[in-house]
Image 1: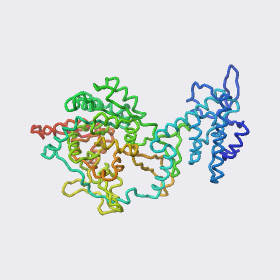
Image 2: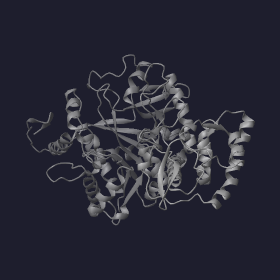
Image 3: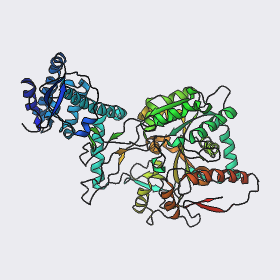
Image 4: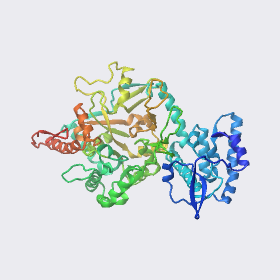
Length: 589
């Protein structure tokens, strides 16, 4: 019998009892003081990862499960006869169903139906001698493999589960290979639902005053799923120091700022909540940082940690075949689904609705390493309040073709529907050239900047509207795929890809008349945006090309610079300093 067997063959095989087929690789093991020869279906790497397993393939359980498994396989045979399909269940999987849970059995068979049989091709047929250490170890590895698939199925539950992920991926990969433009039915225009504000002007001051009445009713969301490895730092990025004078870390800075707002502007007794989105990589480090520092003075019931799952499966090809971990064939290669998951987590954990019930009016989203995040909060809140905005994106002046998302107003060519959204920089120029901007993304001759401002992913939502939209959408953001092809045939990937989603795409799920209340607030970046995201050596190259380097040195220097700018705006005379170089990074001194 071949490595795979058709469902009908598996059905007959199950009736006749388990196969006695053994792997050709054999090892000697000691059991109760005597040696016996048993199959060794695992590589040395996989075998080394197994420890202390308890036998569980007891005869009674096997008999109980046999009927269920046979029924499952018979059901698949009926489907095959009805549909005349050629899908197959690998022999090792069919013979291993007895020690999988009912849910795991159904999931495994459904995956095979969806073109994922390769995930189980390497599964050996269980030993004819059950309850040996080797047989139990192999069973445990298989069960753990299915547990990972179950976790991924649960992590995608708000969209329909793992099978829906595969279906969505196939659709998007076909569109990508064809070269489809997802914005082909839309014409871009310069956005009109926002304004540019300059510190020190009457316009800025008036709007900031409106916002000061709103700061005491905010809940804060920090997206913090990443480690600082790209910076040469092994810990969580929230643990990085904002500056070296006091070495205040970003999490401490955020919490102390929120507490200062609470103490000075919130209604007496009102606690301003903080929600942190963590990942498997950052959860333990975030909890430790909070607990070791007694939450930096914030009450524990003010803080919510919501965790992204195990990621989504990496995909091998245009058929959306799931990739196995190249270092361990009993693990799925997982990749992050993107920060757009924050909205689904806010929904499934009930955080947004809880805040609304507590009287919170606004939800403020920010990144994990932007030391200037709060300087323009009152201004942006004033814009939201004055214009009745459901979603307000803080934006910065953007140079043409700068690698930052651009805010644009799109008009549907057929329905006339309008949306204000963030368009990825690598899509904008092509979109402009294909419509009514033949020169593409170019700077305005008067301002020196692109007429399409840059999105920095600092977002403000009217919380009541946000909750209602979460209920409609379950927080699921539009997905995209960005495979890197080996050649022009677009049939082979350079490396596995995955589906992703982005938090700023919430604007695309705001429908009907509500879509008119999506806007932006544009402010000079030196007042509101200085992320720390690059290693010094990389930042030096970026800065040499004329772009902000986004390194620790500039993150600290820009904090001082922003305060100097504010002081000057109220009449303080502060002279300009000189610039110095540190490890190739130019900063003011």
